[in-house]
Image (cartoon, one colour):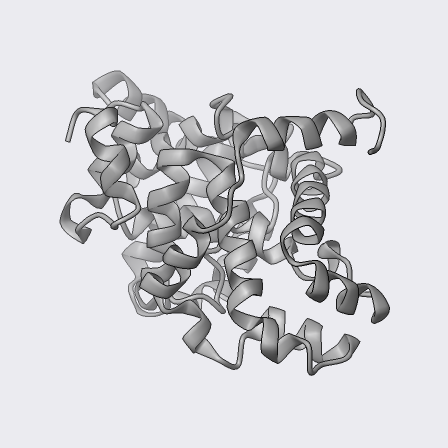
Length: 276
């Protein structure tokens, strides 16, 4: 479990739950926290975040998705400490809704301090750069939604035309997908874990592939709906069969999404190359 090259082909098959947290750390290139890192975390926790009340309110309101946070006071406290520590560390981000689901999800895979430093790495790593999702103005979210809209039109032209006729754009249904990286309440945690196995291994293209797979599996149903039906379906997923983990990952792997494609779309979004 110490070799990224060994772990990458395992990621699409899915990691066993007892090794998943450790595998994710290796793929993200973050080490187990030493004594200094552990002390640094607790120093951050001891400071007062100006987002304290907002964080505590969100924990109480949104985290019934993970059973432990509904019944276990220690789990709730751990999540609170993790979010408070990051808010103190990174005042420009502070706290934004969506980060609570990511933090809670990591806490189901790793002990508190380990989970915090993995989240810290993902926030700042150039390969993942989750921080952009949560900065003021949500620049990372806007980029992801632009990229996804273009990929959707490329790979699902019939469904994209149907969405366009009904005024449905990616911004209306992908916000929760991307802001929580597919860890929010509509998605079974075991399926979220399989998506994250690929995400930690392959980066952002795995997130886009997962989104394309959801639309592919749901296409026949979505073609029957108008604006309201489409939005309701893609927010709440009444057909949970969409989230059969093996089905979804297999469908996701069928889509060719490369880092080069995402970079070109990023350049277009930033205005560095003209629209095609």
